[in-house]
Length: 192
Ligand code: GDP
Image 1 (cartoon, rainbow, N blue to C red):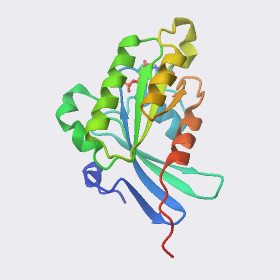
Image 2: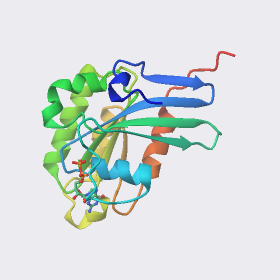
Image 3: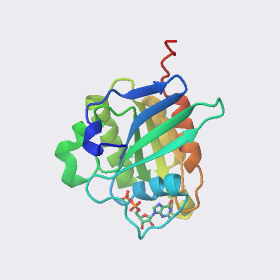
Image 4: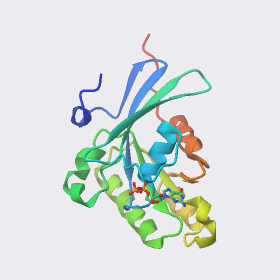
């Protein structure tokens, strides 16, 4: 059904396939090692398996979420835009993205700085109505926390982002992350 990852480049940011079903392109950004692949695997396959890397070239996974109001959102998830070797392509990945999920690791201040870099990039190159989430992952490692939730929340609020801490390892807040994103998507009123 999918014509492959490149077919999505330049698509409109969200496509209402009918009044109840939404299809959106979601890009994941963040330092290598913060857990982006693990978050996707947890959400899509319900498992935590650090040894199975989904990221080979341009990875593309999709998952449909059913919401309580009986609408559905199909997320088309892109997990490669933040890799250094694709840096030059990054603006192509943001284009047409209705959602950007910027991930850092709560034990790594460097990854939080890098997250802020990605937010600036998105503000420059992303669609103006993009829904942005700031995700502090590895919340299970709170004993080694070095980014405070308060600082991250303040940063997120200043930048019009939604903030959540997750653990791909324990599954904490992973579904909530995607549910909160779904709630924030602009919905085009049905034309019929
Ligand atoms: P990516 O480069 O951002 O895609 O990061 P990966 O998903 O490959 O994860 C990098 C490493 O972090 C792996 O060794 C994972 O086991 C580990 N990891 C990912 N998520 C979590 C988490 O929520 N908690 C803990 N403790 N480790 C995690």
